[in-house]
Length: 463
Image 1 (cartoon, rainbow, N blue to C red):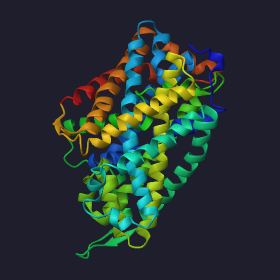
Image 2 (image 1 turned 90 degrees about the vertical axis):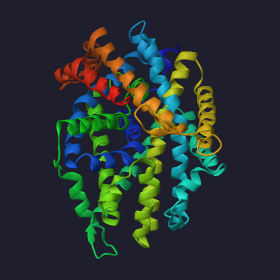
Image 3 (image 1 turned 30 degrees about the vertical axis):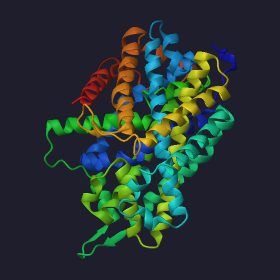
Image 4 (image 1 turned 60 degrees about the horizontal axis):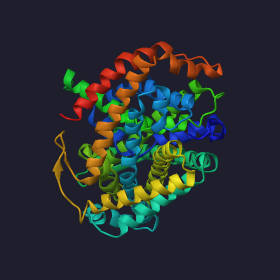
């Protein structure tokens, strides 16, 4: 192993918080959170998500950051160092970002394509029927733009923790937040009259978003809301994929972990909420309630361009700003995914940063090409255990997010809750002299509640 004294570290708590928040604020927040909120009763989903974020999410986030700082190791080696015989959990945790990175870069390439379309004034064409499908099924440009996105991420990783990741986050995150707030405010002010004379406004869409809708609510439906919110937390907080362990290993021993974790929670929750404010009012105003049923790529690359086209002359500018914001979010998240892999290679195989980054870049490039070809030369259609139809990208997403991430989280809860005991994490958090205010809540969550909820979430993936 490399000597811990030579390990890089964040220059301060601000750099760590912005970097961790940048990891958390990604495509999942933008294209999944608003859809789930609209589907699961608006304000009801928001309340459930908020409660889970500061209990369930807090427990997992605290655990992973503390494991990283205590061991000063990446996810691949941290678990084995914490407890002999548990290195296998680190292997699974490290597999998650390896699987995610190629298809995340493919989606990042799609974002680049749409950003360039709006930047060059071609937003009307981007809103046409079949534009998205026609693009992803092409053989050349999707691969090229995937590579452009990947190399931009690799460049940041090559520069290291301070000059690369931290400096990048300090510039991009304030810009991202400014765009998010600006677009959200504009979304609330819009008004549209359709062909039938029906007038809808952004504020009406906002009320649908924030006011709880309990119509037809049953115990089964509420359980689905709970599981949707919990699944979203994996994306929102970047837990169970090795990222926070890696970033935690770069946090100084004298840093106030309690304050940093609180700031990450607040930042992430605020941006997730604002993502809904950006999207739901705008989609409702121009497409009605039926437009709010879209999620994932269909929401971002099909529905929203049609919304921008309906805005008239300002639509192209709005679309350009929106996809610039999405591109920033995708880049900060992709950097964290790649760093989780690179730091693991450095710690386990004693590689230099540049060599480890080069290896992961090649692996991600090959994987990204395969994913791109999954829409043309390598296209096939299979049914997943949960009943969804899928091809290569969907299969990789299912394996990493629906299967491996819950397994990593459950294993982490068992390791900390029952094997090495919660006191190991509590002592690490309080090492710098800060008071762990939610100590009792943490113990209850990590030992009892979180494992049960995670087991239910895992079972849901197969039903």
